[in-house]
Length: 52
Image (tube, rainbow, N blue to C red; front, top):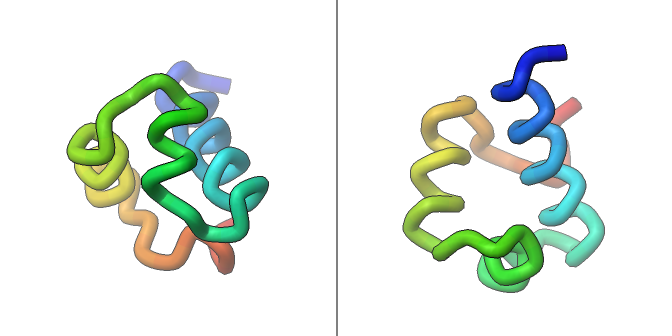
């Protein structure tokens, strides 16, 4: 598993754990909301609760 895949999974896991609350997920991950939104776009994640 690459670092990018691990990061993608961590983001998805955090958002799912918090029932879609992206701002809380960013806080949990220790990143800013802008960074989280940039990463979602970078990884092509449009609906984190439905992603595999």
